[in-house]
Length: 222
Image (tube, rainbow, N blue to C red; front, side, top):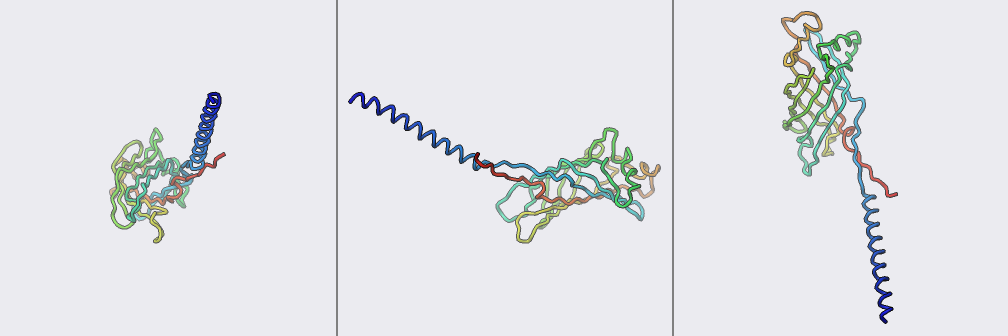
């Protein structure tokens, strides 16, 4: 009888170990099957539009945007979806191209205008945002041109289907005073200052939010 007991006890212990290891393996497999990886699909051809107005004419030009970062915290209610938006991006002034007047591209890239000796990029980093109305916001932030940072104020309009709670795109627009960065457009471009200076730089950019939101992929258990 004592020998039987001695045999049964190890068998029970081994059985418990096998069951426990099998349960742990199942849990591991389940976690792998449910594992989610997020990545950001950074659009490669995002552009931003600018123009300066001088006298009776304007010079429109566009540049390539890089390092776009959009953070839109999710919300459970049906309020304005972008009211906690955080936005940052960079623009390389060496990519500026004048629309329909390629001969002016060299002028808009002239050193000292937007291109500095160190080739700093134009950057924007939002600091806070205010809801102005339905899908309409004021976004404040810091803008750097030629390495000089200044506080700026732009506006954001969210675009969404009436049946959707989240915007599918947004439009950033606004203007800045070039004198804030010590940029005398007329003097740099034409060689002398003007009595009616070209000082306002307007900008406009449409951003497809879906191009920058996390893409979730379920990893299959192998």
